[in-house]
Length: 91
Image (cartoon, rainbow, N blue to C red; front, side):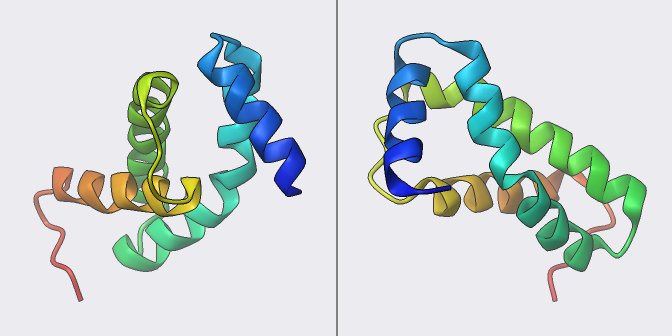
């Protein structure tokens, strides 16, 4: 996603456009899934944590003033969501 598209979508999200939010988050879905899959080594757990990550991000992003790049923010949420798995032990 180019910088102009990213900024435009982020502005639309802040204005309440749920379709822009979906497009923005979907752009990061593959990378987030790969990250989570490498951490939990289980497809179902990775899918569950990915869904929780995207849900939390979709609730928070419209009101969040990002001080870091969006991908950093999303990966932090994903890392925090890993704690939802009782058996998860960080490497």
